[in-house]
Length: 588
Image (cartoon, rainbow, N blue to C red; front, side):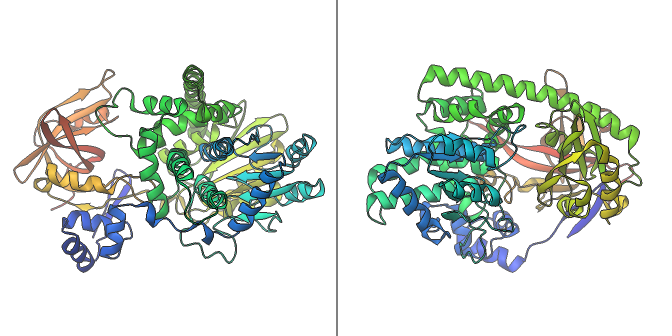
């Protein structure tokens, strides 16, 4: 085990149990490096390791294990049989929109048209609300099915009951107190739940509901071939919601993501085809669709519409059956995403300037900034960027008149939700979890909130040091094309299963480092250790060029080994995530 502070970060790697690692390597006939990575990801035995490396649909838990699933399926089937008007109530993020599309596609498959409702982010906020329930009731709806929301909608469910409207909740968020009282409540986190894998995304819970419904219509636990084909095709939508919602890509989510990415790549739906082409940017023949394409390309593009207004365009793209219409919707979302990026950059620059002028980073434990004109749908992204840069819990508040809407992001050492709980008296409302939260506040009380949050957080600024956790150390001589192809079995990567990251304690820069890219923002150099030299590429690290001279400079690297294939030529390269020039050397 090693732990060193470099460039303001603590680099460390915890050793795995060598006996467990070697047992897995022996029983699976795999390398010790792959076995060690499996152990670092929570795998404890060879059977579990085999399931991790070969995800199968048979590994998915039975939907009947979900609390409330039988009652939900029965109530929905009765509504279909009695021709009751049904509405699907979704959410404006990718998970919510994907879950909504999933249910709409299912009802379309049954040739049973239903309504849908997704609240406007700025005007209505997250989840079911009473005015929306009243509107749907006036339109004749008699059953509302929520997806990716509803676990905190006690008053809205009560209002629906008073209006003669039943509600079926399907959700994956922690239930609130008091618990809502719907006709059926499907959530793996419900009290008393014995569901074996709780951290599903909303799309995963919706998929399990559809599975249960397919059994109902097939009149058998074994669903008919037609329903099976529908479910296999729908896994693409499940993967979108699962990956974009940053739930752990382990266990059941790993299976859904793995098969869902394949379904997305092979989809014949025009809207999804547009998203895949956008993600791969002409690389369709060179590589497969990966989880990072969903996380960093597709997800932000779909989210842009909901952040800047309504998410209807994103939903319509997911369910589109017409190529021309899908192309138009895709173009609209790309423009919205570009607009979102510009708004985000403008707010980031303003917020960063304010932070440097107004915040005492040596003394303040929480950053609280507020300004008129900031877009409430974008400030959460900006807060996350500031946390990454300054490593301090950050709350940004968009002011409009005497009201403010805020979005907070935090660091692992500080639960921002616990801090907000202690400042509850000056808030008009808040919700979230340890690392992210939203607030509503009167403009006049922003200063009070800043004071209370700084009093609530007990971690001192000097203790707020970011950690870079690496998977271990390997000599450069160990990296071969065969080993990297073996490590590809760990994909898809995401939360809980990141791409492997390794440390090189000391290497020697050889040759002439050079800049890459049209704007010269990237850096390329060769690093040598024990007689082996490999090319390294450091994205967005051009500022290091002067420090890598003269030849022979010693560096410490955190890197991801990659296989660069060009024709029949295969070469191992290092993608640099962190670099520290060792002047003077930090290690013997």
